[in-house]
Image (tube, rainbow, N blue to C red):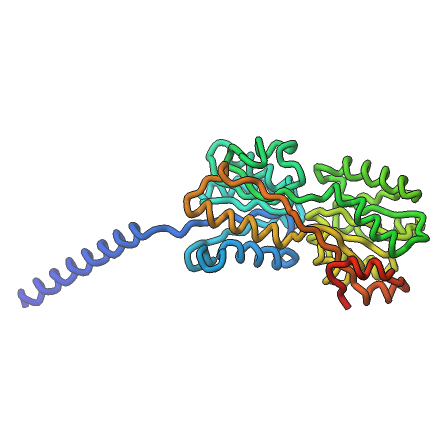
Length: 335
């Protein structure tokens, strides 16, 4: 009986030591790096771009795979950009290894502010001039904890307008769908008005920052007899591209967009760089930073290729004939 008690005590002591050893080993296991993914939109509309980011992380088999050797914590503002600073601060509190600030300069600024006291590497997708925006000191040498991609948007508005007018040469009034809350809203509006008048047309500004106001904006365009529409490159509109494309079809309003994803979803035409490329690029940068490189040593990238996409089926539904020279110059025709 006494021997049994001794054996039980020995077994309990052994089990306790084994558990303590197991906990110690687990505590010494390397923690997966965690990426904080920050975006002003919602998860479903941005799913293709998140996939592109993951492709960049993987980097041809030499990088990271979510759930295997890296974790990603997603923070979506769901169209409420005012929440971005709070979401960025939450990621910093959770001690993420890096923040991917996507969806424009407003997200990049939120991440920059949140990482001022506790530096965390940030890769961003921002506007065309991150130096003027105060994000980095130089494109070639960011000299900070931020780097990423500077997308060209404002300077491409005239080209989108030009392509739209090739399709609707008799148009006299062209509307611009604009988010007044965007940091470059005033500059975009001013440039559009000047360009439209230079083409001998009348500009119409449609300003909306809320999903509930989008339909009213299209009704206003029809009431003002707009013949066509240019949609600004903006995370707010990208997040709601299905609704915007549907409204353009309902009101038979020919529209030009920044990204091919609008045209693939039933829009008329687009002209711009590839937003998916930008997400892949910052994914690659994230992979390199997690491996030890510094953001200050990675130059801010800018797109070098721009593509025009036309949806021939939509053009036919609108009663438009696509000129042969336009067909020849398009990078892709969607039927």
